[in-house]
Amino acid sequence: MTTKVLNLTVTSDSRQYPYEKRYPASMTLHELKEKLVLVVGSSTECMRTELRDKNGKFLSSLTDNHSTLEKLGVTDDSVRAWKRREGLKIKYDALASAENEAKQFNIGDRCLVHISNQQERKGIVSYIGLTKFKDGYWIGVTYDEPFGKHDGSVNGERYFTCENNHGVFVRPRDVKKCEQDEEMEEI
Image (cartoon, rainbow, N blue to C red; front, side, top):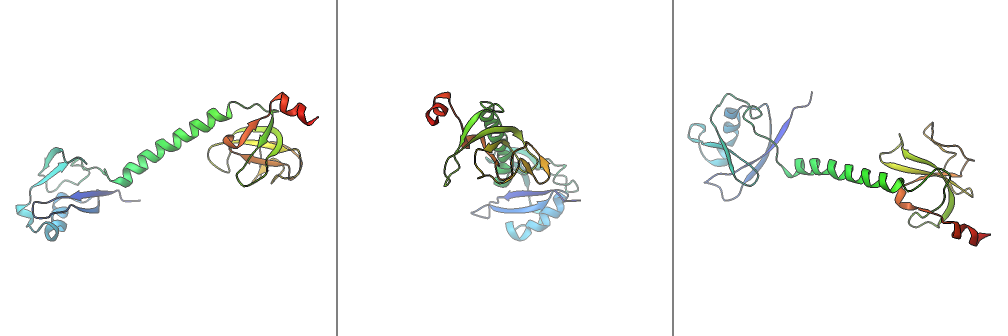
C-alpha cells in the first residue's frame, strides 16, 4: 500500500524564505509541529498553524493536534500535482485532436505518408483507431512497396492484413489523403 504524500510549503515570521518539504498525509498535526521546531525556531506549544491556499489566502486555523493532515483538509497544491492534473488534460486534448485528424480518412483511401527524415511513401489506409501497442489514434497503412515494418500485426495482435514489410502504423498528422488528381498524374 502506498502512502499518500503531501508537498507542503511552510512559511514563518522568523524565516525570510518559505520551506518546502514532503510529509505523509497520515501524519498528525502534532507530529508535523515536532518536525518543524528546527525549521521555524519555535516550540510546538508556541506554534500557530494555519492552512492557506497556494496564493497565501487564509483557509482555516489548524488546532486539532491529534488529527491527521488529510483529515484537516491539507491538500497537495505543489507544482508536481499541478503538472499531474494538467498533464492528464493535455493528454486528453492530444487524444481528441488525433481522433479528429483520423476522422478525415476512410479504409481504402489512397494516401501519402511523410515521417520526418524519411522519403514520402504511397499506400492505402488499412486501419484507423486505437491500438494495444501504444496510446492514441493510429493510421495503419499498406505501402505500395516493401518499406514497411510488418504485415499488419504488432506484438501478435492483427489490425489489418498485407504482405510482409508493407505495413506501417503512423500518427494521423503524418498521413495525407491523395486526391484523384494526384493519382492521375502518375498514370
